Image (tube, rainbow, N blue to C red):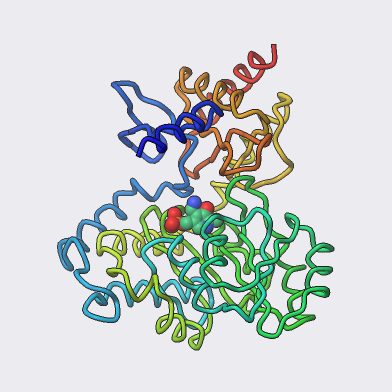
Length: 387
Ligand code: PMP
């Protein structure tokens, strides 16, 4: 299979080769690599739950009580009380009738979309939706119509002009994973209501982040009860692993019986579920964690903006620094690493050609000195890059 080598060489020659660096996490914001400690600004652990002692203890306890693995799929022998409890509390948190857990957010998206949509349906999907939504659309075999990123006039025109004999779905990220911008869910729901479309929002980066107490996009826009399908992940603000869908009891019952990534996969591991449940409870008890997260994001955003570093006008903890060429983005990432700061260079195919960027993520548990060091280091590296 020498052709694999040739294909890899092409990837390398385009500066798009990736290697997974191995980091030992010391805390939610500090990692160690080859004997050196770095400050992490590249994790989705928005609330610092991965290293919260109560969350860690709950994960260990769950492994002890229920075992290290579920041992079977949900509809055979893999359902244990902790899963059902977490589903109940997630539904309360999302203010929906029910929820259903998947092993990952990726599996939730592909399972839910392919379970609900079929060849007679049309899915209207934002241009910058996550890869798992794109893959779910492909698996569903529905006609997929891409609308320009957050462009409601484009969506309106496409909804009007695209013939459909089945159901129409509008699917969007709640907070976009690469740019950190917020989908205009209020307009999307209005448009959907005007033509009877079903709305699905992927709140992977909005759960525990957007809205009062981090309840997500629907709550942020005051649309509780008006978004048919809400997806979330446990791998980001909840510091664990797993995905979920929240909605009506009817929706959840149907997905439980038809979503292949739910039916044909071993149920999520108890440790992850125990950790996620403890994280959810902590967030419910301490909603001010979300305020701290946004205060930290504001501090970094203002510091970078004042220094002329090109960032958008957003507010979320995902802060993209637009660079353009993949080579420059990689240079900047390495430069920052040498100053002790870990950020990620996002390059094609994750983003379109010419839009490479650094993706900086801020956590509620970053300390002020870590935030100011990041701002100063980015300022200095950015100036050097442009000299
Ligand atoms: N949706 C979005 C918008 C995401 O950013 C991600 C993760 N990067 C996922 C879904 C997948 O979630 P998970 O990591 O739990 O598979």
